[in-house]
Image (cartoon, rainbow, N blue to C red; front, side, top):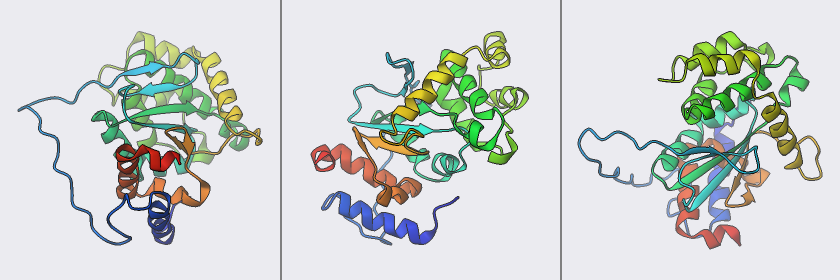
Length: 249
């Protein structure tokens, strides 16, 4: 599934309707690029904070005091999640999280194993939890979506998960490798799926993936296309950062 040009145009209109007066450019107009933040010569990006929330299921990445919180519900096998993470708003969110302008929270589902067959989602969520233990969650999460196998293939095997871990410096090692092979975090995987299902409210299947809840409010289905346009999603988050009351109202 992908979001076409027409849907992205609707997303642009929707963004202006959600936050009237906060977005200066309309659909099809270019917006001035903000100058990059000044950095010292040869400065390396700051290490992102990564932790498991006290609820035992939410993975929190970034500055806990950031003015914008984006809570994502994702299944590693979901191809629409890949659209968001690789070509949609995901890269913009990672930049804002790195800068401390936003923090990102994740609830990792694994329902596609039951729907599509196999166990790849569970294995991937287990591996992501192991990466969190190593302080490499954000990097590994990005790699898994970049190299996501086709949903129907159930391609997240132990072998592939370990191979992809090799693309994250410092992740591979006895502890991580053992956690992947033995499903060390199986209990976390099951708890996370139950948390995802509870988030669906009246729908026991869960809210769908990807779902984004921004500063406590879920992005409505009719504005869903905003998630898949990197420029618009950046504008959306910056508008909320600048005038959070407009979004909450």
